Image 1 (spheres, one colour):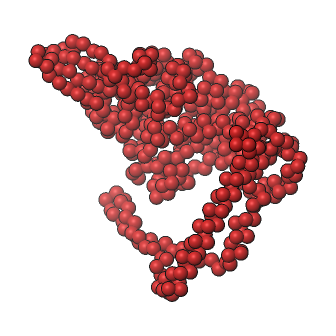
Image 2 (tube, rainbow, N blue to C red; image 1 turned 120 degrees about the horizontal axis):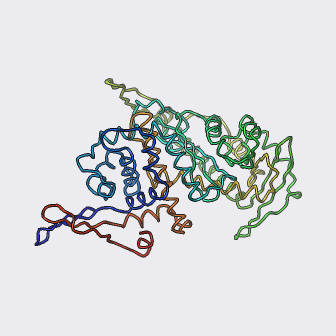
Image 3 (cartoon, rainbow, N blue to C red; image 1 turned 45 degrees about the vertical axis):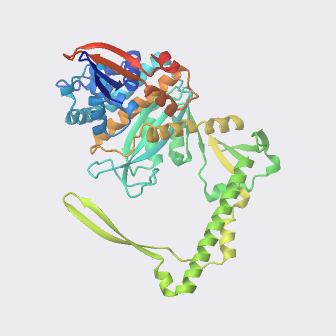
Length: 480
């Protein structure tokens, strides 16, 4: 978007991205990111750390990419250098990487302080809190946090880091994040995150999280602190047996979808917990369709396998074995190994396979929740389903702000990269609230902001003659 032109009077006109800069500047005026960073007195020499942070956040909003490309964007294509009073000769990759390390090292001070300012300015309702976890894969092998674990990005071949998020249910503001080792399971990360945010929560708070973090220890931790939780029950054999015993005729109808499909519930108190069993007719249709597709897939694979064996015999079996070379770089040594992958052949008849796939057919459409608070079944279901707000936040972090993959190599740099991304997400979310466009997606809002450009006219000596915004729409005029 950078354009430079010379007119007959030797004037120079160039156009710069301005949306990210203007949003960052407005949010800084409201909640004081630069003041928070300066108060910590982390960096005393060279380019001030608050200017590094502000320009990186603006670049993340304008054009999310690696730190290297963000620095280039700030230097060549953004109005950040001009608006934040950064000299061009101060914008070096090394300066920004070092700044990112310092930001990551102090992330646990910077972000909570920022949220305190947000709370005072906008007011956060922490009576209902969503917590969730995700992972992001990592390029490189020098980061201690990077471990192999369950990959939400479907990249088991890569190491990853785990991220925990906590968000208010009301205004959907992410008020906490954590960065942990990639092999840490959700149940353990929950305990770490909960102990960190516990002091911020009112005694009446209800924690809402997925079944991945549901454990006896975590439930006791929440109840012993005087708070409550709502979560899904893990799909175990014992749960399936109990659901089989539920009499559908005793279930109460809660509501119906526009399609006419209904949702029923049955609940009871079990020990100190309240259990809620639901039957969703729409979900039952989806489960049945998935089972049919799985059956077709397995029968087709079996038929293709039989054809190969009949046609080629032992050679047909050998062709089921795949070999591939895996090359990995370890410091100055390149190691190449050959991996053999073979599909396991199981002696089962069609009837046995179908029986195994259909053994839980009667449970199609069933699912279960549990809570330490005596909620009405309709309220419990609606609260739990609102958890998709934090899932959308995770999706925005990955697809809109492009937090993955990490292209920095140390623990503090990874934490710094997450901090910058979280601040950008926070600023966009607050802008949604202020502009009254909560119903719009972050991508839609960012597309509008990215149209904003700043046109600068300089004379032959490089002195600025005029500055004005271009590509103004009604939304951008309101924003400005």
